[in-house]
Length: 209
Length: 209
DNA sequence: GTCTATACTGGGATAGAC
DNA sequence: GTCTATCCCAGTATAGAC
Image (cartoon, rainbow over all chains, first blue to last red):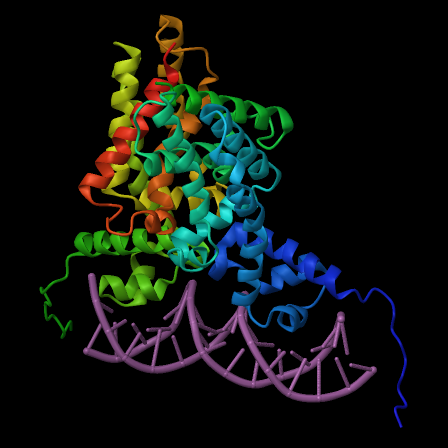
C-alpha cells in the first residue's frame, strides 16, 4: 500500500542538527559540567526539543562524551604531530604553547570542560580520550631542550602541568577576574594577545638555562 | 504549667555541628559547585539530617556563602598584610607565592570552589568576598620589583593571573593529570613539594630582569 | 536542637502522533 | 526526524513531634 509518501524535505538535515546540538551542549557543559548541565537548556538553545537530544545521542552521558571527543580532537591532533621531536627545542616549545593558547582563546569552553571533568567526574571520561598524549608531547620537548642545554634542569611533567595552568587559568576564571579590568573585555583580541604574550614570555624566560 | 522541663544536654553543640556541616559542604561544593552539590550528600557526610542544614543556614545559597567566606578568609587576611609593601620585592613575592601554594596544598578544595564559582556562577558570589585584594597585593609587589629593576617589564595584573594559574592548576586538575604519575599520589608531601619548587622557580626565573 | 515525614518542583527520559 | 505529552525519580525545603 504505502499510502503516506509525503516527503518533508524542509530543514531536516541530520548532520547539521547534530552539530548544532553539540555546539549548545558544549556551552552548557562548559558552564555546569556533566551533572549540572540541563538538557532542557541545551534543547532550548539549539531550537529543538529534548526528545531530539535522546534521538541522536541516546543519553545525557552519550551527548557529553560526543562533546568531549569533538572538543579535544584538535588539541590531540596537534600533540601527535611528529615534527615536535625535531628542530630547535625552544622554538618548538614556544610554537606549541602559542598554538595551544590560540586554540584556547578561540574556544575557551574546552579548558572549562576539562576543569569540570577533573573536579566533578574525577577524570572518568577524560582518561578515555587520550589527552595524556598532550602532556607527553610537551614533556618530550622539554627533555630535548634540557639535553641540548637551552633549558635549565626541570621536572618535565610538573613543568608541563604548570605551563598549561599558566595558559588556561585566564580563560577558566575569566568571570572571576574580569573585575580586575573594569573597562576591557577579557576575550577581546587585545586582551587575549596581552595574555598570550605575557604568559609565553614568563614561561620561556623561566626555562632559560 | 510548664510540665516538660527535661534537659537533653547530650552532644548538642551548635558551633561544633555548624563547623562539621561547613567541612562537608566545602568538600561537596568543591566537587560539584553550587547547583551541582546535593544537600543530601552534605547532610549524610556530616552525620546530621537535611533539616539541620536549613536550621543553621536557611538555604543552600546561605550555606554556600558561609563556605566561601570561611574558605577565602585566610587568603584575604594574608593579602591584606601591610608588610608586602616593604622590603626586597623578589624575596617578598617568592614568600607570597610560597605561602599561597602552601595554603592551597593544605586545602585544595578552595581553588576548586573558586573555579566552579567562575564557570558556573559567573563570579556572582566571588565578587562579594573581596578576593580582588589578593591580585592587587601581588600586582603591587610586581610593580615595586619593576621600579627597583629586579623584575623585567611586565603587565602586573596579567602576570599575577598567570602566576596564580601556574600555582593552582595542579590542584584543580589533579584528577585529570594523576595518570601522568601512575605510582605517586598527587597530594603527597613529596609531590606537592616538587610542584611548589618547580612552579616558584619557573615564575621567579621568568620575572628576572 | 535534632529528628521523621512529606509537600512540592525540576529535570531526565520515553511513548507515540505526525 | 521532529514534535507533544507525560512518567517518575531526585532533590529542595518545610511542618511538626520530641
